[in-house]
Image (cartoon, rainbow, N blue to C red; front, side, top):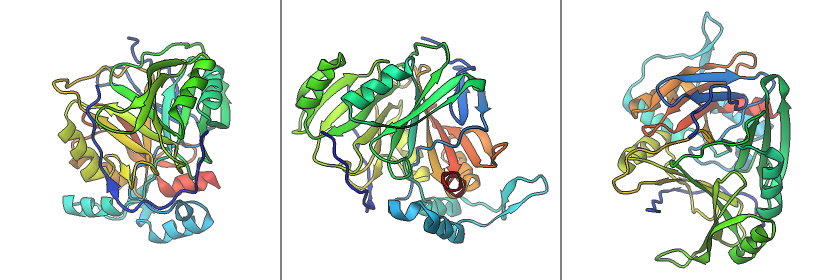
Length: 360
């Protein structure tokens, strides 16, 4: 039902906008290999397990997938990457502290980024895996249990992690229910026949919240379903695509502010190239609604970058809040920085070279 094609290099940035109509966050909930826990106020805490490699959701300047990964890509990025040097503390730091807004903006336009992972929590990992594989046609790519930190991760998608956008499910021992909140919207899955997919979902006991039919004001056939935890999935009828997992929709309180933050400084309002071939971030503004309850189910996105230090400067210039200053993680020395966007959605930026080393 779902067929994938080799990913081609997107040619241009595509911006699309649509108008579609608790439990407290627990500091003990784990994400891998690092987590950003928000208690609902201004306190952000982090946890890190050296036994896990980084999981990323990257947004940025598009380059061919075959060029981004592998030994040749690593050499290319090492040759083209920003120069860094070791400080007296042993951390890596930029060679120059002179940063201007224009320099940062010019650099962001050439930064190499790619969507990799989106992270969220589920209450029954086996049940969710069964639903995703049997109803949505995903593959279980890998699964890892971290008993010392009392959580398990599963990665699912439609192709290898080094070339496809995938989901990272987190199960925390003993927690069987999460509050999804009102801020998270849905994930999007492109299928060749929405009606057949809906019939399969029904046969497997899944919940259908919108029967197949054309989208209002258009011709695209869609349907909405829910997974066992209540996360919504929009099924979109399309032909064969290299990226069936095609959308993450989040609600924002000020669309212009959100677009300015993502487009101007992270070059990632929606995606690169046509939506039928690329995963995109969909921002939705509902008129008159300025704040949303984010719950504690949806966790974060992660974004690859050539330089976490310059990225942190760009985030500050765009009005984002840095919640972890750029620098290496303990144990593996992978450099990251973390932030909140103007609406409080979490993002983690991870050094591209460090990620490639972990894939070797």
